Image 1 (tube, rainbow, N blue to C red):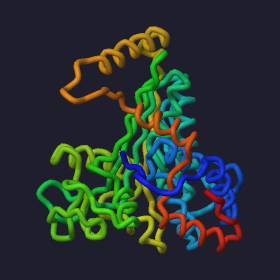
Image 2 (image 1 turned 90 degrees about the horizontal axis):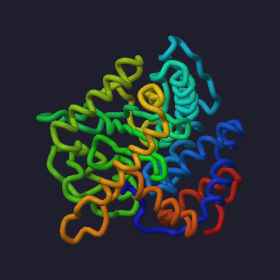
Image 3 (image 1 turned 90 degrees about the vertical axis):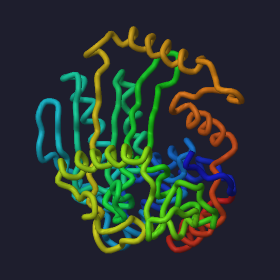
Length: 356
C-alpha cells in the first residue's frame, strides 16, 4: 500500500475544511475546490497517501500561484459521437476535467451500452480509482487511466521515456463490495518515493534505480533516477500502451515530451491526457444476475485455499475500504515534515492549519 506508515493523526473533516479553504484562497471556485478536496481526502482515507493532501496539496497550490495551472475551469468538448467524446481541459484542474469526462461516459453508456471519453491538455487528476468508482453506483463497470511525466526506461534502456501511467477498474457486485483495482505500472508510484524522501526513509529493494540505472534504496537518488516497472518487460509494455492511448490518441504530451514533474516544474503546463470508460452491465446481462454472479466469484476467490501462514485472501479494494473505516474513526496520519509544510502554507494564506 502506498500509504504513510506513521505520522500525526488529523480528523478527516478538519483536513477537508482546511484544504477547501486553501484552494479557494488561491482562486479555485467553491464547487471545484470541494471536488478537488474530496478526491484528495478520499485518497488519504483509502490509504493512498501518494495521491492525497499528504503529497499534492502544496504542489497544486504552488502551480496555481506560479500560473502554470489554471484555477478556473475552462472545458470544451471538441469532438463528440454517440459513444465517444474528447474534452479539451485547457489547463484546468485535472479533477474537474476528469469528473466531467466520467459523468459524460456514464451518461453515454446509459444510451449506447459502452462509452469512451478522453481529455486532453489537462493536469494531474489524483487517484485513478476515484473516477472508475463513479460507475458501479450506476450499474456500470468503470475504467480510468492517465499518463504522466517520464520516470521509467523501456526494457533495455536507461533513459526515462514513460511515466507511472496508472489505471483503475471498478466492477459492481451485490452483497459484496465492488472490485476496485487501482495501480501504477511501476512497482510503486513516484509519490511514494517522494513521501519516503520527505521522511528520509529507505526504499524497499526492487523499487527504483539511480541515475546510472543501478538499483538503489536511497529515495533521494531514486528521485533523480528511474522507477522499476511492474513485471519487467510486461510492465513496460502496459505503460507504453497507456501512454499511447492517453497521450498520442488525445493529442497531449507523452513519453519524454513532458516538461517535468509536478513539484519540479513551475514554468510549463503539464499537458497530460486521460481516458475514461463506462460499460453498462445491462448491455450484456441483467444487473441482478450479474451482481449475484460477481458475489459468487468474489467469495470463491476469498474462500480459496490459502498458503501456509496466510490468514486472509483479499479482493482488490478491500484493504482500502477497511483503511477508510479506520481512518474515519482514528484520523488521517500526516508525516511531521508535511505538517510543517501545511502550517507554513496556512500562515502564508491566512488559513491556519487545524490542530491534530
